[in-house]
Length: 90
Image: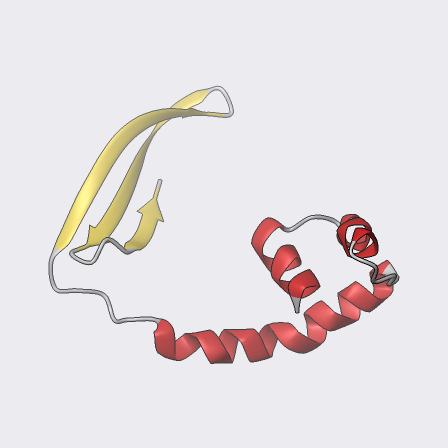
């Protein structure tokens, strides 16, 4: 599960997940990590679903002006009263 968590959190190449596992004494192939991710990701998504809360009824919108790929653009971010970011709009 640790390998799946690392992959889902940091999105490294599968070969880069092999190395930390080998340092911990677990020698696996990158194809095995790929199979674990394919097998266990839907289960983790379903397990996390009850933890999500519905967005609140009060929203706060942040607006900023950032440079993306050499072009200035507006970035909007909506946050509910619980501090959960609901969406980003460009």
